[in-house]
Image 1 (spheres, rainbow, N blue to C red):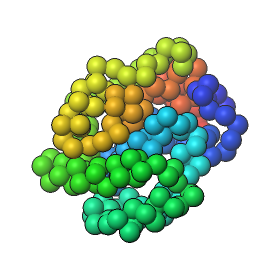
Image 2 (image 1 turned 90 degrees about the vertical axis):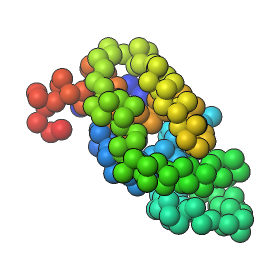
Image 3 (image 1 turned 120 degrees about the vertical axis):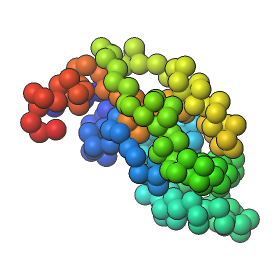
Length: 192
């Protein structure tokens, strides 16, 4: 099994790479969760957040935006005391702020998926990178996404976070050409 070079031998990491990363995601709740987790990752490694993902789901009501927008100061204090998540006040508050913006975008665009996928013209971008060194950390599209999402009320949504989100949610497929999970290689790989 050949995987992208960033994948370690950790089963959780391998499962994330094999079953989630780069696969088009259209479920609003899952997109919202991923957006919040990418914001939590800022300044940290994705591995740190991935290990805490179940704790985040429990702490943030399975990323139910309708519940999150109702969080009061007592709930914020509870979250800041939760050792299972990153206890950064700005990051915790950003989830609440982003829940508000998420619900507004759902209402304005019919779904959050429709809102987010328009940044790639509703079609996944398939890249053909030979190595991870070629993969950018941001692009003109992630710049545009970041700028618009900030206007729409989202926080912790810089261009690098946006590009990482685009990769994770399958708006962009950045599996390298030597990875069995690059679409070019799938036709020859029955186990994928």
